[in-house]
Structure formats: structure tokens, C-alpha cells
Length: 174
Image (cartoon, rainbow, N blue to C red):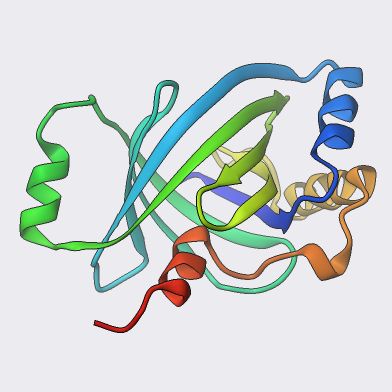
């Protein structure tokens, strides 16, 4: 199971982050319009990501805490229009939907997102990723903290929960 150390933060300086990534020769993968449908599951989180670049069924475990946090992730490459979404909608039910535009960059094993999330605002994410167990967790943490400092992310801008949690808090009770 791939492990990553990640942060999510409110973005007040997306242009500065973009400039730093360009100066560091980050690999720009493109702008992905992503719709993440979260499903009701008893353990962890399950979402179907539908985008023009990334399409995955993602199950993950992560504690809600401010600052760098560990995630354990299972990915299944999905095919748009396959019927998977309909199966999940009818079998376990939809929890919420997150609609965003995401710029995706990589430097080695570190992935960066500059996000504009419908109804929530602008954010950045840093994910230091270990796909095969070869990078110690302490090294992933150091990588994440390095970029937090480099980008000038303020402690007050770090978020503890996911976009789905933030959207659910905004929705009226049924």
C-alpha cells in the first residue's frame, strides 16, 4: 500500500508557488478538471476521481490533523464511463461531491497541486509519496516540510480536513 505524507493549505500565493515550481524545473502534468465523488463506507474514505488526466477509485486512511499527515492509499485505475460510479452509487451511496480544477506538478517523488475548489476557494497540496516502501517515513516528512518552508506556507493556513469534510460542513442537515 503506497504511503504518503501530505499537507493541504489555503493558498494566498499560487503565483509564487507556480514560479518556484518552474524555477525548480518541476514536471507540469497539466490542468485537470476533477470531480471526486465520495461514497459512504464504514472505514477510511472512498472516492471516485473523474478527470481529464487522472481517473482512479481511491480508498485511503488519514487522520484529520493540521500540518503534515500520513495517508495510506489504495488506487485502482478506472475507465471513464465504465459503470463503476453507478455501481458504487447504488450499492453504498454518495456522501458528497468535490468539483475542482487542479494544476499538477512533480519533482521526483513529490507531487504538488494548485487547486481551485468550487464553493471553497484556492488551495495548495504537497504530497511526498513512497510507492514501494523504499523511502523512510522520516524522509517523506522532511520533503514535505522543506516545501512548506520554501513556499512560505503559514501555520495558520494549514488545514486538517479534506475538501469533502469542508463541503459537508457547508451543507444543510437533511
